[in-house]
Image (tube, rainbow over all chains, first blue to last red; front, side):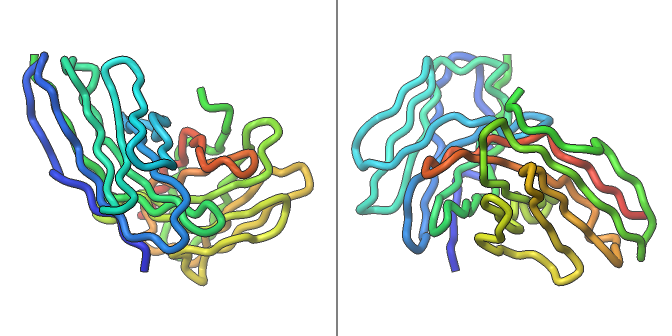
Length: 110
Length: 112
């Protein structure tokens, strides 16, 4: 059965801190790894990673995939209170079916 | 705004009843996915349709069914509702081989 595990489950940091969110996966016919941010509504897309070792960057957020070790990390630098959310990792397998992890709840204190 | 629409936003019903949730994908997207999100289970994939045909099934109960119509909108039918079916139901769409799924705003179902 496909599985995605995220850690830690929750994290509390202060504004300006850097955080690293972890995601490991076991998915049959793996195609890609996706990160989403979920506030009090629908998940919004952050990154899609298909190749190992190539960092994707968007502002203060960056992510990288290791297909050999079957994990990905999402880094957020200089955190802001607006980064407070649940961060979801999902692995895409056959037919683009996404298997989600349970999410990491990030709280950024002023 | 992702371009995916879902109706209704909220639905309150009683156990044993049947409801229909509706989803319109982004313009041009052929694939529609349905997910259930509850507090204890996280986001769970239910079912996928591609251009009117069922493509993949996840953890979907037999009491639940879905279809995708020729205009590509999709409906998720939930019957014999139980208290445990209370959850957020999301629809997502994607265009082709790319895997990025864009999520609708969700329907919050409350079964009393």
